[in-house]
Amino acid sequence: MRMAKMAAAVAEHGQDAFRKLFKFYKRRVPPPDFSDVIDFAKGLRNEKVFAAKLNLAAISERDARGAGLHPIKDWKAYGLEGYPGFIFISNPFLLGSQQHWVTQSLKVYPQKPNVCNLDIHMAPAETENIWERSAERIRNKSGGKSEAKTLLEKLRWVTLGYHYNWDTKTYSADRHTAFPADLARLSGHVAAACGFPGFRAEAGILNYYHTDSSLGIHVDESELDHSWPLLSFSFGQSAVFLLGGAKREDAPTAMFMHSGDVMVMSGASRLLYHAVPRIVSPPAGFPAPLGPPEEDTPEDSLVSKVPEEDWEVCTRYIEASRVNATVRQVLAPGQLFSAAANSRPAVALSGESYHQEETTGDENPKPKRRRSSSADS
Ligand SMILES: O=C(O)CCC(=O)C(=O)O
Ligand SMILES: [Mn+2]
Image (cartoon, rainbow, N blue to C red; front, top):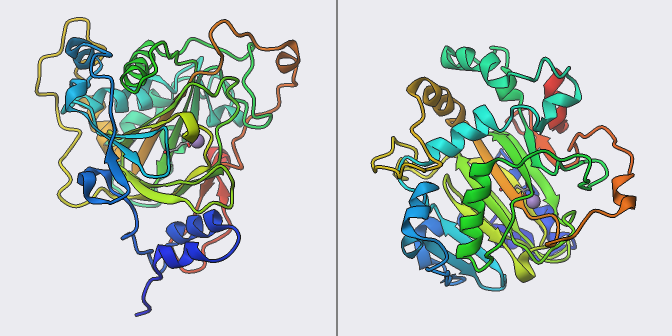
C-alpha cells in the first residue's frame, strides 16, 4: 500500500498552502494521515498548545450550571502558539447538558421565523415543521442507503438574529428576528469568561454536516464591529478544523473539534482564514459526552431534560452528523446599519460557495454537489 503523505510535506511547498491542506484532509482514498492534527482533548501534549487564562469571576457557578456548563475554574481552556486571541475550550459542558443544545439545534432553531437552506427551493408552508415531518421517519430508519432523506437530513444551515445574506455577504436591519434567548445567554457566559463582558449575540449561523460534508475556506468579516469575538459550539461527530492566517496563502494549523468543544476567535485571530475539510468519528474511548444529565439543574436553568422520544431522534441524527453554531455580535454598542447597507437588494440566499458535499467515497469523487441543491433532490 502507498504511504499516505504527511500533512507537513503537503503544506511546505507551493503557493496556496491552505488549499493544498484542505484537499489533503478532505481526501477519502487513501485516507489522510491525521498525526499532525492537534487534539486539545489531549491537553498540553502538543508543544504549540498552552493553558489560556480565563476570567474565573465572570459568571457564578450557578449561572454556569444554568447554561449546562461546568464552573469556569474547571474549564480546560487553551491557547495556540502563533494565534493570539484564539481560545479553545475543551468541552466545558456538564455531562448530559449537550442534549439540550443538540435538541434545540435540530428541533427548535430551524423553526420559523429563522431562515434555512430549505427555504430557497420550498414554499414557507413546507419548511414550517421540519422536525415534525422528519422525526418519525428518522426514528424508524433501518439504515439502508436507498431511503429517501427527510427534511431534517437535508438541512444544511440555519441563520438566527440578523440573518446572513450569503450572496451579498451582509447583514441588514430589515432581515432580523429575535435571537434565541438560551443560546444568547450561553454565548454571553462564554464571552465573559474569555474577557468580553457585554457581548451581545446578534447573529448566528448553524451548519449541519454529514460524514461527506465540508466547509470551504473563508473569513467571517461581514460583522460591522470586529472587536467582539466569534464563538463556535460543536456537537455530534468530530471535525478537522483548519485555522490559517490573515492571508489565504498562509499555511493553516489543523485541529480536531469534538462534541461540546467551544472555540473563540478574538483579537488578532478574529479575521483569520478557516475551513472544515472533513468530518470524522470521535476517537475510540472518547467519553460518551451526550448521556443523560446526572446533576440537578437550578430552577431557572436554560437546560432542561430532553424527552426520551426526542433524544432518540437526535441520537440517530448525530451518529453520522455534526452541528456547529457560530455566534457573532454584528454591531458596536449603539451602532446602526447605514442606509446604504439597508437598501442593498435582497437576493436569494444560497451559501453555495461555502457548503460543499461529496457524493461518493471512491477514488474519483464526482463533482462537488452544492449543499443547497440537496434541498430539491
Ligand atoms: O463548523 C465549523 O466549525 C465552522 C463554521 C464556520 O466557520 C462558520 O459558520 O462561519
Ligand atoms: Mn467561519
